[in-house]
Amino acid sequence: MKDLYPPIEPYASQMLAVENGHRLYLEQVGNPDGIPVLFLHGGPGAGCEPYHRRFFNPDHYRVVLFDQRGCGHSTPHASIESNTTWDLVDDMEKIRRQLNIEQWLLFGGSWGSTLALAYAQTHPQRVTGMILRGIFLCRDEEIDWFYQHGASQVFPDYWEDFVAPIPEQERDDLLHAYHLRLSGDNDIDRMAAAKAWSVWEGRTASLHPNPAVVGFFSNPHTALSLARIECHYFINHAFLYPNQLLLESDRLADIPGIIVQGRYDLICPMASAWALHRAWPGSELKVIGDAGHSAAEPGIRSALIEATDKFAKALS
Picture 1: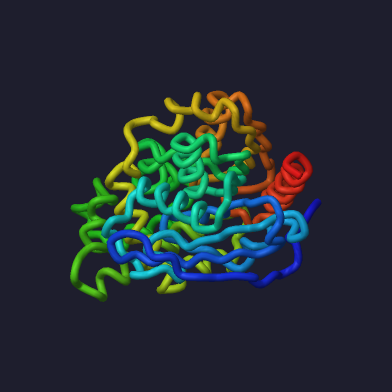
Picture 2: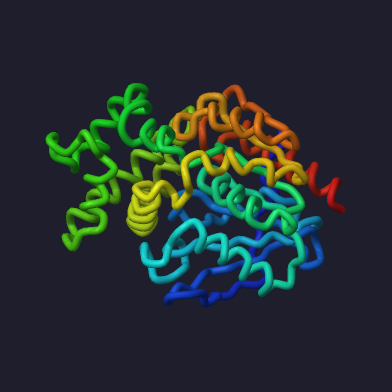
């Protein structure tokens, strides 16, 4: 079983100004002359972590990581203004041009898989391949499963804490009830809602409890951006028309891909990965039988590194 490459520091970092006051934190690690790969973090609103740099052989890859609008080191923090899927797709193109990259490999999990698919379907000529984990197609049934009824049946104890900030009379529409509090002016209510929302996700992310994952999600800085931005995207159907990413999968025809999916992923259940794989003939699906959603789980981690090593050989 493969494990992460050794810790590595960026050889370059910068803040990139984009529209409407947003500034994106951008860093590069590995070999400046290597195969370009863009890392797309989850959420939306989670931001990058140092271990994300370590899925790639630093001798072979020029790894580009950035914190999407409103999260991580990007500013303004937790902003939902001018923050849509298509703003992020445009940001990716700005980064590509800024760094003089002609084509790149995309690597993304959870929401990162959503964004990778949206970008690849918009700019297929710029994508050499994709490595995707924990497929999230942002369909209403997926959002309803995790935030209204579905995962609640598997984690009733965690669910009780998730719904605690919401009065019982509002619990038939938790997404809008949370949105009301996360976009409101009451700082105490907003932070309480943000932490409950984010901790629910952190607790359910792995098959076996992982305090490090829960710790990241419960950090107030991460919790606020994750909850506000996720809720903003989800009440707007991720700014996609119904089933868009599957219906436009023909645009991926010339793009090879590897999908890594935990069998027991209860945040993004395997049905979405299976549907994408069936609609995308150039994809290879690797099901990890002893894993949930998190990229930090050993089986998923190993499969992702195998995938980057495989693409390093294919693209070199």
